[in-house]
Length: 44
Image (cartoon, rainbow, N blue to C red; front, top):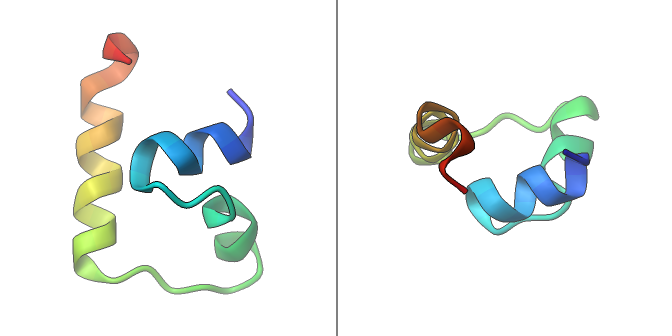
């Protein structure tokens, strides 16, 4: 999966991975959304 697709599917932010790599600090709600997305696995 491309970084852009991951960001879009996980939190509706296509720049998520790029921004995280550049030092962006996710908040608690965003972390929860990402963890939920990862827990779903191949469901999407």
